[in-house]
Structures are given as structure tokens and as C-alpha cells.
Length: 106
Image (cartoon, rainbow, N blue to C red; front, side, top):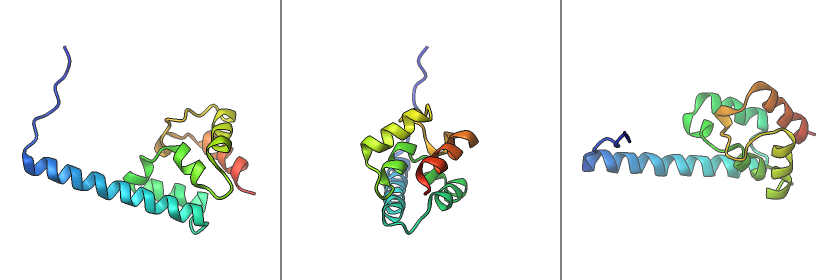
């Protein structure tokens, strides 16, 4: 049997929508800070430990936002570490985080 999603009131839908927009804006702000070099990889991981919306960001999006790293280089780094492109920051293990540090921090 397929589970059915809960029925939400209009007010609950509006609140969920506002929360989703706020989370997307926060992730965009963080990616901008990463791109400018204002936020380091270590700081971002610490931030992800304290902010749920950052922990839900895809690791690929984080890596491709880093200065001098585009989508192609990010894909190569992810493949080298056997990290799925759909993996979220929260889902990265200690070894995968260490691999990213070695690959990205110069």
C-alpha cells in the first residue's frame, strides 16, 4: 500500500512554502560566500553542523561553488572520492570530508 501524504491546511502550506523559500535563499547566500572566499570549507562544515538548511545542501553544489572549481572539476572530485552527486553535506562521512579537504584546500 502506498502511503498518502498528510493533508495540510492552507495555512500549513503557506508556512511550508515560506520556509522553503527562506532555506533556498540561505543556501544561495552561503554559496555566494563560498564563491567569494568569505567562507572556508571548514567553516561551511561547521555551519552545516548547526544549520539544518545548510546540511541539506548537495555536496556537488558546494564544491562547484568554490573558487576555481566548476561543474566538470567538481564531478571529477566527487567521482575520485566515490561520492554520489546527489549526496548531501549531512551525508558525507569523515573520510569523504577529509578527501574533499585534501582535494580542495591548497
